[in-house]
Length: 112
Image (cartoon, rainbow, N blue to C red; front, side, top):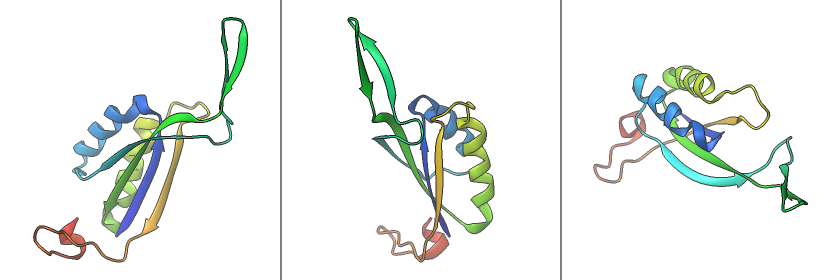
């Protein structure tokens, strides 16, 4: 099993959720976060003064999938979250040793 952590633009969340549902991926945790990457924030003007916003709002998705579903989930996220501009986000993939469903005690892929 793998855990996918995707950091995406907040306005792309609904599109990504719909794409994931279409491929049968229903379990997802969503968190509103702030961060920055290579773009190092943005500079805006307000009443004639420039100010820098160096932590931008992003959306963090956490998804645990079987190894077989990994590439399909990554493809769905990339195709729907990508704008081609700096700040589209990143996807991090980690191995998951075990999962336990609290309600039933199921373990492993049956618990996902």
